[in-house]
Length: 447
Image 1 (cartoon, rainbow, N blue to C red):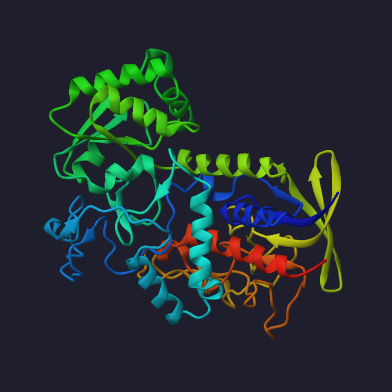
Image 2 (cartoon, rainbow, N blue to C red):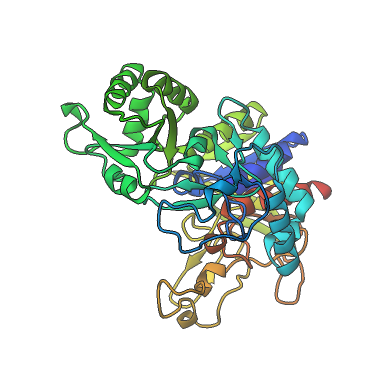
C-alpha cells in the first residue's frame, strides 16, 4: 500500500502528473471520484483563447485588419489573407508570442510559474499520447476557430483530427446534420448561424422520442448504422463538400467512423462540440487510462479520500473510502489535482470557500457578498472564479506569509489561484502544464 507518488484527482492535470511521474519509473497510485471535467467540457485543448489574431489559418502577412463585430458564421479576418498550412510542434509562432507576453504581464499566473519552455514540454508530452490516426494538432500559427453547437465560432488551440475540417468551413459549402430525438443539437439553428444548410435525420422507431449522446455515440460505432445514415446524407447533398455532425463519432474508434462516413458520403466529415457529456473528453480519459495502466499505474476510480494523516509539515497517508470499508495508502509525495467546484476540489458554505482534503488556505474575497458582481454577464469576471490555492514557484501550497504548508504535497490544475480559465480560455492548457510541472517538481524531492 506504499507508493512513490499518490495523485489525487483524475482530471487532465492529475492524469498528466501521473503520466509524467510514471515515465520517470515511479510507482504511482491515482485516486479519483470520476473523470473530472473531461467528461463534461473538454473537446479540444484550450491554451490561451484571448491572444490577438485568433485565426483558423495562417495569414500571408501579419495583419490587424480584423472585424471583431463580424456576424456569426463570418470569419473576423478577410479570407483572402489566409493560406492553409499545418504547423508542427507544440507551439506555433502566434501562440508562442502570445504566451510569452502573457507570462511577462501576469507573474502570478500559473503559466508564469511553469515557464514557456516547460509549457512546450508539457504540450509535447500530451500530443505524444495521441499518435495518428486519432491525433491532436494545430491549424495555423495560433488558435483556430471551430464551429460550436450554438453556431458560434470558438477559438481553441489543439484539436482532434475529427474536427479539423470544420476550421475552414465556407458559406454554403457545409451540410450540418442532426438527429430527430437528440435534443442537445439543433442542426437547422446551427446551420443558419454558419450560413450553411441543415438536415435532421430520423432514427429507427425503436429509439422512441429521445436519444442520448452516449447512445448515439455507441450507434456510430455500429457499421450498419453508419452505412444507413451515410447513404441518407449522400442522397441529401446539394453539392456541399463538408458535413458537420455533433461530436458523437464513437468513443473508441472515432477516426474510423469518420473515414467510413467520408467514403460513403463522398465529403469531408467534421465533429461539432456540443453540450455535456463530452464524447471527445471521454476519448482523452480512456487513452490516458489505457496508457497509464500499461505503465503499471494503479487506478482507484470511483473512490474518495475520507481522511488524511498529517504529521508536522508532511502527509503520511490517506484513507480511501470504498463502502463499507476504508483503506490506508501512503506515499513519499502527493499531488492534489481535484479541480474546482464541479469536481469537489473546492467547497463553499455560507461564509467561505475551503479545500476539503488537506484544508489548505484558499485565496478568496473577504465577504461572500463580493463573490459575484451585480450582473451575471458582467464584462469583468466574478471574483469567486479566481479563488484557489496559492503556491510557491514549485507548486507547493503556501500561507499568507509565503511559508510552505506541506513539504511533500504539490498542487496542480484549475484549483490553483490567480487565473480565470473560463474567460482566458486556458483551462486545458493550465491543467496540462501544471500537472506536468507539479510532477517534475515532486520528482526533485527524495522520500
